[in-house]
Image (cartoon, helix red, strand yellow):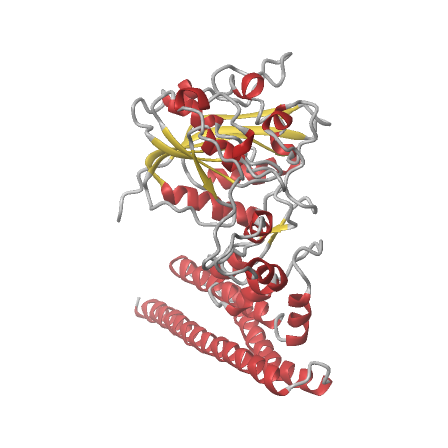
Length: 471
């Protein structure tokens, strides 16, 4: 009986020693990774000051200082991971081994990403390309200044998955963290080049282009915003909701249409394809969310939910919310009839959407997809979106958007995904992003999108945020 006990103790002691050695190696690897990052940044400053970018010896010296150290760390991590996988473990140690194997894998991924950023010449060449030049892979250079992986994921440009410009006119989504302004030097300098004390130029379109590409325009000092020449008093609130506004209250110089009648006309060439009928208040907008629109009459299929049936999920519990969509404020107008206050977030893409919402007597929020929502945590009862999230969006970007929406929704608040459409082969991946929120499903439907070649589907859902009490 004694010998088996001794052997068990020896095995346990060997396992403990193994775990201690793993922790020691981890500490060593983290230290090496930190030092290699330090020398990488230090070398970058030295190379910018002392080296000519055309000097090959200087470039090879830069690579040798960081590359060798990083390669050594990578080799050690890979060797340790292989040994940990091959070592015999009892059931009590399996969890520990798996945990530290995953941790080593994370460190390995981080250091390998550092390994790809050692050549300052390559980075400078990438940064020299203008983000609007139409390339498929915009610069990710600024992300490499951060060590925290979540920051790096957020800062990196999110390319459009379909390989073409999205509805905002950009090849990717540029997060508003400030670095994009350095890549758009010409545009931001043009925007800030104005006469102090004078009326600003009619350059809102330039400012919006900067916004969409992650460079929120700086406030301009002593330059008055340009207004319409003959601004007239808006219609009273009892008339403005379902009546086209006065054309004099909009600056039309940047649009194809020069009046609201043109925008509402079915024959007009709209500047924005996602909302071709948004300004047709009487025929298109008036019945929305009140009368059912059937997309497949032969099968009686529709992705639309009606406002009364959604509000009945939480009787009296929906009071304030955000509509992050592309439109002229019709959702907010309808919800107002049910004593619900909705703020409408959109930008002006080919038409004066913000002016239209305001002239209807509603609240427009001039906001891009790149920005953190300007609401505090757990404050909104409802978040609605339509014609906005579609199959062009990057999966990592979708995570950032959904979790920011989750942040502002109160416990028990509703997330209304209205007619999200994507390719059939991408549907499961997108649905998984919504399922990750672990919301309660009140409504959930997928129907075919029949206006093209039957390759796309609509997805709609009404989901409730769980309480998630503090622990």
